[in-house]
Image 1: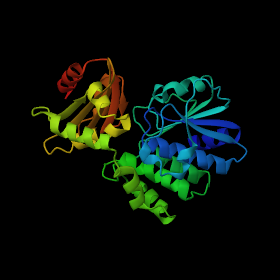
Image 2: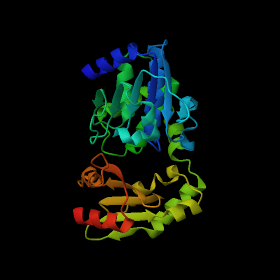
Image 3: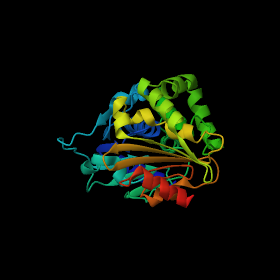
Length: 316
């Protein structure tokens, strides 16, 4: 726990801390960031802490009491800080425009992605279920009381990155953490209902389109779907409305790997991959400069959808 001690000491000597996470933040990014913010405020009440993101938080985390503490980055503001903490961001570039606010600022990097290059001045990178699991351990290390608001944030992160405990990144320690959070009052049914089982009309339409139009390569056992920007805009969608597509593609009984490609702008495609068994999609995402985990990774590319699919099929 030497890194935890180093992080603790740095927080103790800091007065103005900015916590951030990756663009298009998911439940783990938000849960870990909010829990860390509230935990630091309990640990060092003389310190001013902010949670700043490039993009707005998705609607499905609005039920979290701490969500109101999340701020969107404003390029017209000057952020007066003496410490930056990046959570759940596999690369510094993943925090987007917020990187401008933390240039030349001492940076702590806390993450669970195996592809993380350890870009911080202090790095705590551990291959566990989620960054929320790391933050849970860190708050316990600080002897910070985990109240219901911190608990709900952490549990949301856990549910997000374990797929509601169905992925093989779940360990005995993950269940111990979940059990403790339930013991202090976190309602599993509430988190699953509000976070996982509440969908917008656009999300339902995108998922239906993906299931209807998906393609499958029998030889390489790849299920894939491409969503053009035209179709994305037609349904008035937000990026968060497409998050479940890649998971549903890999659920096809014959599929071993899934690929979801979303055109975010002309010449810019965001790719997400999942693996059912032994295929290491982190390696494949690395071809395009991306990464993540063995069974769940992503990337951004300037290639066409056809070129991306061709390269991936050749690699599989």
